[in-house]
Length: 319
Image 1 (cartoon, rainbow, N blue to C red):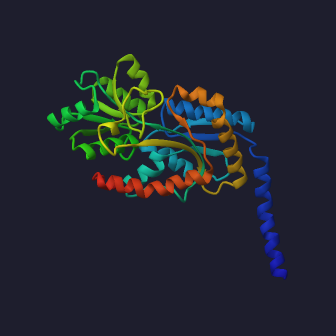
Image 2: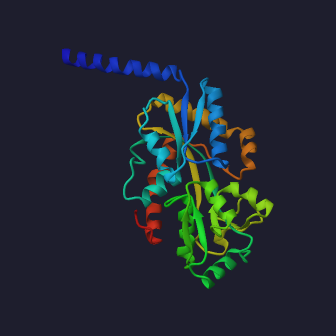
Image 3: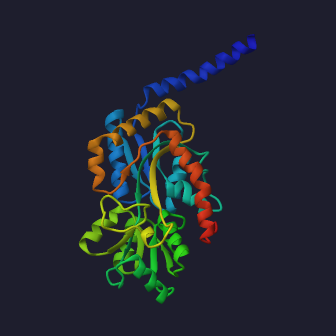
């Protein structure tokens, strides 16, 4: 009985400060790691950070940490204290695709992170330089087959969604095009505009360049046509079975107290479910998809074997 009493006392002495800290959260600024440079994703993440700042009563400070296909930001997040004062973007590309493409990472996507909520999802857009004489997916395939190894495509790094979606196109069509990885989306876009590469799959931020005529859009990568570009066909309309969209979420280091996770999740879901928020981001052609922490974690868990199989079928081996 005395041993049991001592155990209870020890447990309470540890648990009560933990509960008190969770109830008082937050008491100082929160860091928010964004694994991208400037662009649409950065803008969306900063809007979420601003909302959390207003609702939590403490600054949520965005920190751009691009590079190494998101490894830099995710490694820093995984190694941060699990106290709710460091948040970061956890994405399909960083948690699923990168894991399937690397022999080893400095973190485990399931063990080292606490999922908070999915934020949004979006298709990729297949674009080419205007000088390339193609105006459709079918014409691009024909041109690539007539000029094997002559076309170069940009990505934001090996194992990224930009990389995988293009390799999926190569696998399904048999075209021979060369991969040129960049440090981030802005650098990849610059490479496309300067002529260092001729084509790429890029996120919805590229639509601004499409409108100016600096690049030509051929298709979107989703299973159905995007709402913002209903006249633009999907790749799947030409290449049967082709479909890919990517998702972006909010995460924290594993071990963050559940009351803190629930508080942040509640604020994020209320913000993303607000019609005013949805209208605000409609121009970005993204679908706001708030979720529970469990739903986001389940996405990672179920997608890992799926995309690992796709990569191996495409001949992409862990590096």
